[in-house]
Amino acid sequence: MSLLEVKNLTLGFHNDEGNKYKVVKNISFNLEKGEILGIVGESGSGKSITALSILGLLPYPKAFHSADSSIKFEGTELLDNNNIRDFRGGKIGFVFQEPMSSLNPLHKIGQQITENILIHRDISRKRAKAEALRLLKITGIKNHKERFNAYPHELSGGQRQRVMIAMAIANKPDILIADEPTTALDVTIAAQILDTLVQLKNTMGMSIILISHDLSVIRKVADRVIVMKSGKIVEQGGCDDIFRRPKNSYTKALIYSSNILKKYDNTKSDYACQIKNLIVKYPIAKNFWGKITDYLYAVNNVSLKLKKAKTLGVVGESGSGKTTLAMAVAGLIKYQGNVYINDENIRNIPNKSLRKKIQIVFQDPYNSLNPRMTVREIVGEGLEVHFKNESKFNKLKRIKKVLSEVGLKGNAADKYPHEFSGGQRQRIAIARALVVEPEILILDEPTSALDVTIAAQILKLLQKIQETRGLSYLFISHDMRAVRALADDIAVMKDGNILEINSATNIFNHPFNSYTKSLIKAANLTKGKRYGNQSVDKNMRQI
Image 1 (cartoon, rainbow, N blue to C red):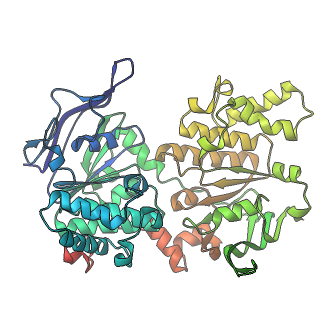
Image 2: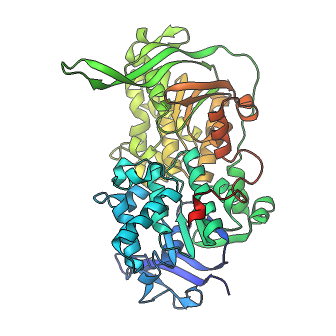
Image 3: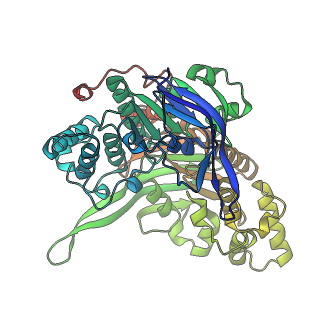
């Protein structure tokens, strides 16, 4: 008998008019003891709602499931189970996607873990506290005794996720459900979290359901894989079979989308932008008289060169200074040093002219687009500044042309941002940047908020635009796969400093800096199975 058996599961919701709509449609799968089952799919595929239904965490009675739906844990039916709370946090642990939203901001983390233990185990508060300290230690929290009394906002994203894992395994569950546990984390931190999960699985002998839209994560850890789309399972099987011999066209599209490569052109080129000795610093300490005594160097004496019609990728984790660098190049923040566009110092370029030469595409297209303006108004806003003497007819012609260029046709110009998907909104943001005919496009994490297939479409679109327009890209990202798809040259940043600069080919094939190597390894761009058979950390043996 399987540890978990899901049969004929159909889930849905009642809308405000009382009508029903289904989001998961007649799916069946099993989870065996000691295995990692990966569930992969894009936003809206039904993977998270399936996981939540296992522990009855849906908003009943608004949510419903069909009469023949069944979820059994060791033969015990969980649907409509009056004792489902006995399973939550006990037999089955859950690690949610966003730990900051899941942890109580008013309680210290040690208190939250301790309470979880006391709910399910008949032990004293003193023993529960000792157990909570041990859990923090084995999940890799440094200075765990001091962190025990910290509030969630005092921890980093990776530390908060480790706290969530500690809470989930506090009662030695048979099943651990991890719903996108690495999505909000930097690539190296995400790799550490996955290491922790697999080591815990190997030590405790528990089973894991790992939910992700990132195929590279699933490929490195899962024994079996379920692929979901539009509430249905379109393919399932062994991990190697799914990735090496996919049968379903959607599965093939997912795998292809994570492996877009750049066509390298080794011809020499002039420089579109030169950055020399750039410094951006912020005061962090003052003396008694108010004089600044110390600075934080967000960008520390950085020099870079961006070639014409090429892409310079700037990679690094959160806080490395890459976005600050981009803002300085665009003249949006104060800086020391010099930035040259076609050998002209941007300090000498009028602000209006500089805005035309350099345009930015931001990370979150929804927040960067005015929800009260139509697409026509959003895209055409720059034309009112830089082409104000043109006729309305010519302006409209430019708008329609650039919308068609980014793949938006028909009546898109007359709609509002909320009427579009995330990928379509990013296309609008790109169109807004392109319509003023810039020379340089700064791309600040343009695909990080998108599903894998949508991100692939945007990357391919950017490749095509660069080929046809001859644009130069300054591409800011922590995603090494996205950088590999666009960059000709790469600069690796950490703590405001450039650690390594080289061609993309050399960076990926022959990195010399240890931090660069860790980024590439963590992004699963190296060959071989990273997580499956590693040795158990000494702290894990304490479980």
